Length: 226
Image 1 (cartoon, helix red, strand yellow):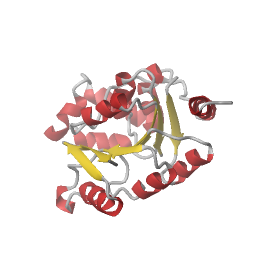
Image 2: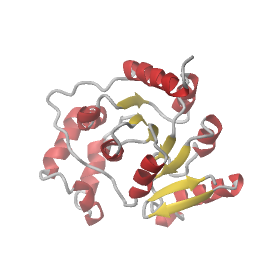
Image 3: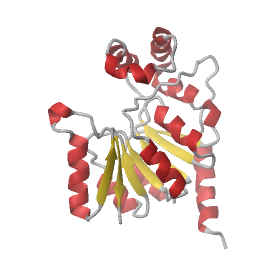
Image 4: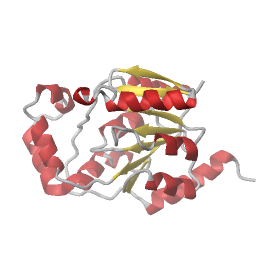
């Protein structure tokens, strides 16, 4: 009889075959991360809870994905993102803004980086950054919650679901329903001061409905179920 781990390994193997990391010959990798701080909160949970299967909603250029995979060598990340749009224009707006200086700290030629994203587009730009982790990353183009239901149908039982997409966290309840044993956490705690911090409002409302608690550290947050 297969154990739960063996079943999940089989599901992961099938997902990797269906959604492989493509080769990105000629596309330069760039270590760019929209890191507002506090990610050690998630890294600690990866180790303390021995997280092996991690779903990230909203990967952008995979800066946070790279952090998780580098932190735990037996971790597999399923990344969900449409990977479409004029992302170079977003990066152009970040360039002169000192708030984002830390995001570019590993990129000596910022203009070359933006031009690369303009030339190759969001998906290949992100996948170039994932080449060292191609055996532990599963990129699935699309949106949540539709793809959360897809993962459920395929038999995946993630240990952690991380939200870095919709600031109002409309998928939190779906994730809890589909994956009741998964840990939940995410980014953008400090985003949107002029809008009353929508992520904070959503997490607090979710915890009030469920009886859970939360911990926040800089831009990062995690739900505590007990």
